Structures are given as structure tokens and as C-alpha cells.
Length: 251
Image 1 (cartoon, rainbow, N blue to C red):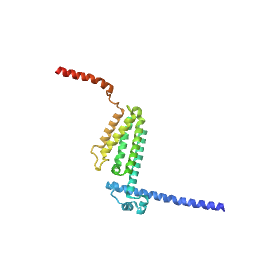
Image 2 (cartoon, rainbow, N blue to C red):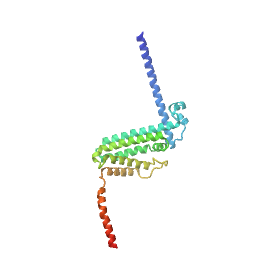
Image 3 (cartoon, rainbow, N blue to C red):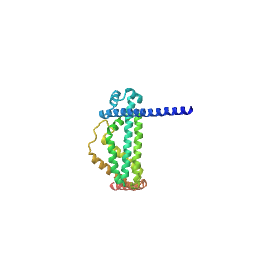
Image 4 (cartoon, one colour):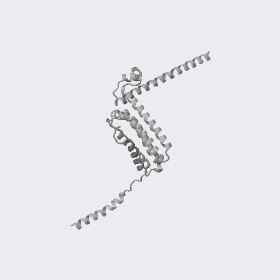
């Protein structure tokens, strides 16, 4: 008797598991359609001016399903941005891995990394612009964006430090500064921090070449020699004497 109950219980559990798997799969598919529909409207219109009714129609999901997932349209927008940042992160990791694997020297790595990284930012420029606009007033998006930026910087800097022996001076500081410069230059070109969607008009390939050349030159060049503070203070009295002597002769 107990054996029969155990068999029946196992059968019920198996059916429940089998029924639950498709349900979870359908739920995940429904979520992806919601996010894809909202993302599509944001890219098409260049803003967040869409309605949940439109998402319901295009995504083929019910309004009830949307509200089951998201308490408001703002939460859906945040989910779209989060998904985009995750996609960008995955693409950046992939580019860095591939470029590292094919580069034997810093001179080989830098131009291919700059081109790959810039292509990712260019590809996602509109969504990045919308994300930055929302981050200016949405603490949640701002916080997640800051964390993502730190992760991206850390990954890029660590990749550059794979060629530490070729970098002149403080390799960590130089790698950090050049990553910030590369990002800022590309972001400015793509107007990521502006509501103006017209990018600067420099030739893209020329920009990649010059940015790569500048980055490599900065990384491998020694810092220009500067006079020490002790040397400057030691020479100041001599200069003062010369100045006073010149004034006396003039009198």
C-alpha cells in the first residue's frame, strides 16, 4: 500500500514538473516579447513615448501579463535599459576576449580594441543616449549605469595590463586614463550625453586611426622629464639675485 502511494506521489510530482516547465518557458517568452516591443518603440521614436497598450498589441501579450511583471511603464523602461546594458557588457567581453587572443603585442591590441569597442557603442548609441537621459533623473538607472561603467572600465583596464611590460611608467594609471579618454572621445562623437541625435561629422575611420595612434603613443611613451621641487626652489634665489642685479645696473 505504501509502495503504491509512493508511486502515485512520484507520478503526480513528475506531471507537475512537466507542466511547470512549459509554463515557465511561456512566461519567459512573454517577458522577452514585452521588452522587445518596448525597446522597438524607443528605438523607432527616439524617446520613451509609447503606451502599454502598444506594447500589448505588438508583443502579443495581455495588459494583465504586463502588469503582472511590471508595476508601471517606468519599470518596463528600466527593464529595457537593463537588458541593453547586459547585452553591451556581453559584447564588450566578447570583443576583448577575441582581440586579446589574436594580439601578441600592445601595438596589435590597441587599434583592434578601439575599433571593436567603438563599434559596440555606435551600434547601441541611441539606447545609450536614452539611458543617459533617464539616468539624469532616475536614481535606479543612474546606479545601475554607474556599476556597469565601473565593470566595463575594470575589464578594459585589466586587458590593457596584460601588456604591462610594454607600458611606460605607471601602467595602471595610464590604462585607466586612456580608457576614460577613449570612451569620452567616442561618446562625444556619438553625442551620447546630448539630446541632439546628430553625431559629430568627423570621418569615423579617421577617428579610429587617430584615437588608436594617440592611445598607443600615450601608453608606450615615457612621461616628459620635469624639474623637481627641490631643484626649482634651489634656483629661485639665483634668479632673484640676477633680477635685483639687473635692476641695479639699470639704475
